[in-house]
Image (cartoon, rainbow, N blue to C red):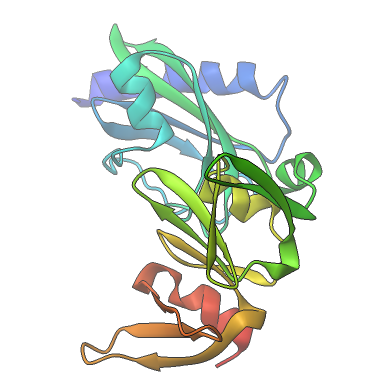
Length: 223
């Protein structure tokens, strides 16, 4: 965008933000994206890593709104955020161009909406079984489905890892895009031949720890 268009877009963005502030919590964050990049960002109290001109990430709320031109809401993982947050996206127009307005609600709002799970109901074949949450060793996302494990038994649940991350007790730690682990079932942690961390569980299962989540594990276990 040239300076004139950029100034115009900023003015329009400010108008949208002023309207939004009348009905969302004061410490919410706002972002506006046009042409697959962000042109406006206002941070609330969340630790959000986002800059003007940054490209819209595939799969994000902004990307979904720009692609579908429909309202979208989702729980956000830590690709842009240190902890999950609930966000909403709205299709708007800036200088006659399709744009996305994204609102990220404060973590206090999200926590009020999401009491911790006491149990999960899992499916095995054609049976559903409620399982106490502290019996679950780890949870896995595989082939667009979510599975949890109890003494090496596998159960399927319809709840996604992003949703679970918001509603699991604090002793469950996200260690990978595909794994959440119960720290009470961790036997040891070590580096493999490629210097990546591997978590070994009491039952012998080995789970990878990705670089983007290693700080979660270090912080929880203080090593």
